[in-house]
Length: 637
Image 1 (cartoon, one colour):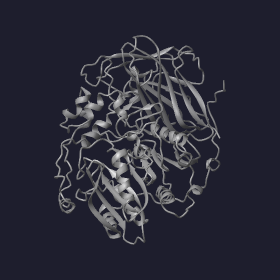
Image 2 (cartoon, helix red, strand yellow; image 1 turned 60 degrees about the vertical axis):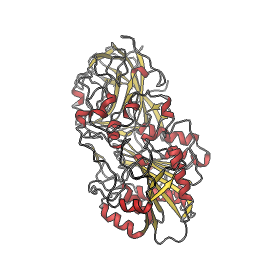
Image 3 (tube, helix red, strand yellow; image 1 turned 90 degrees about the horizontal axis):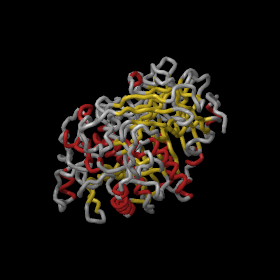
């Protein structure tokens, strides 16, 4: 067995850089929307309310911006979205429109910019489906674009969140005009990916992710005003100057609303629109219906060069990293060799809004700028324009922000070369409850303390969510926050290393293996990875959950026998963080993180249709027979 080292020494940063660092450019995008819109209309020929026909006759509302000074055919950037792109709403001065930013950038660089609403959204005809039929509507739209007289036949897809999540399904179709893809924050488009069965962010570890309820409140719209299908483009263009068909949703106190039971009727409880949430909440993590829609799964091909833009504090960062690995391992060689990835220390869709300093929650990462715009447009030029631009010579396959060291690093793959496993075992004297307890992480597999720690999980008083890698959950703020308030609870087990004598770089996927028991037929176990600073501040890095009925796989449902000890594999988690000298590494273990995840009611029933709960008495075991542990990817170069 390989010897376990509790500390390592990091090599100087210059040694770790595989390639020269690209020049720094300003990434702070604070230009007001009206200014960008005026510039866009000044530089572009604009075609509004072009109704593009799909194979079933449904027409999708499309706007096209073509550079006025173009000499001959041009490549196109395709921005496909369920969101409102009308100019009528008041601009958000705190968060300028990404559509206008990238649209203006595209036209200035000689691209046509094509923006289209998914079917069933605003002026687009038909009924909305989540991800908007990427394999049919997306394919038909690309064919239409490449057939236009102004097109050079090459189309790049670009977008973040819902404008990215459909791109993988389209890339699986290998459309000949699909020249490149830039998916950013694309996790909700991933179904099954290796060990992850998140099914578009509905699940993690078999538990429902409640941010989806908040998001769907504003998006599922089976009942909406529409114009007759025979309405002419001229009429639609005129009507669009004073209608945008956007719903004005009532204000909801989500901190209160997410307590509602049963879960499947949350939408009705807040007066939300009819739609898919109740149906999806009742599905199992491996329900066959997940494989019939627009989600991308790990048994599909991928046919497009791509630049993936991810964030450490975005939802689904682990599945996003697994997706990159899947494409690098399984795509055709030409495609496989043209996969690039950036991982920023930011929130959802903030990788192109990096500020100086960048503060994510309460953690200050300093100046995180790295010239993302230059990298993005150099990548797109490489695959949509005939001129060689040396992109491959200037950029590594992976560029990631190493938190704690607060520097950008390059790598040829993910995880980087030079990562070795380090195993730390959970141990205590029987009282790991709270940070004031005696829980510890040690290199000793046998331990020398008590054999188990116990706590009470009451669904009526769950551990509250305090930051984390998620988005779009009302007043609940994502990011990195001091967890000491959470760690004061008796229902949170806390295991911590001794202070490191030298920095420890944890870079990659973290496996968590717990040996657990309960007096309930089903319950959850949660894990949070934390960096404890010398002054006691405890910043969260990543977290996950496992619903114990799925411990044998997400394709089966097996209840627990009270008192029996089970091995539970959670995650994997993901991070790139240096635990500096004097810092400590900590994990929190509990049975809830609400409302990030729905509460397990501990009954062994369906959970989604229940309103009553029972208290569970849960235990984490740690001994030679039951070695609860975490396996860390330590960068040793």
